[in-house]
Figure 1: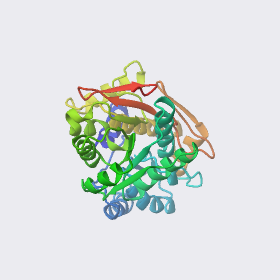
Figure 2: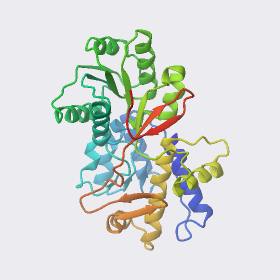
Figure 3: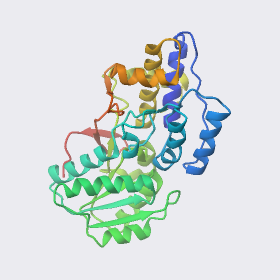
Length: 338
């Protein structure tokens, strides 16, 4: 929903200013419930029945993994998926345009901060038992191996459930100083609450996909000190002109809209698409849109820069570290402190 809100805000903003060369942008949205089979059916419907020009903001790794081959085969642009999975960063996928940093970059940032800032070496992982979770596991393992370390424990849960007790017991056996988490907000929140209840004294670190505001709300009092990496700036940092624009666009679309990391990412994806279409001119073709993004290369979106090239289909590389505060807000930090 956050991705959809952000993309809609960017499209509505562009339409209010006259559209793209006089043509209005329309977002057609279907809910796949985070299930690959539904994602495939929706994608076929969007391409076959709705005759969409491009697919934008696909949410999730297992869903993206299911539908990306369909889009590549039919040369339909696959823009700004909400996942950092490595397979989408393959430069040979000429129809895929990523915006966010990869999960490998996030997990590397985790291990760098935990080992470098805090001097920790005993690290465990909780991950969702699917392609998303395994992408995170692979990134963490690589980052640890680089430093001569190994995971002290790992636990998994099934997608769509909050059944994390068995995972918690497996992880506790490893006596970790930190638990890194690659999952959805409800099971991750459940894990942290249960860990606090059994007095597991560890730092908890979450990936951007978790949905920060939803996680903080679900955690309540248990959220203080939980770390979440982000792939966009703080959504209330109005010193960045793009963020100020995003806030105005969100309010114009929905006066009750709450700003957040996910909708800001959606907004950036929408703005990149609008900017590329504006530069494309006529005729508007799918191939033209994709080559415009690669040929223009650098897009300065009012203080947020995206860079592309012939062998680089990912616009941003930055990872931001945030910590949940007592009141559920997020504070950006350069270093983790004990």
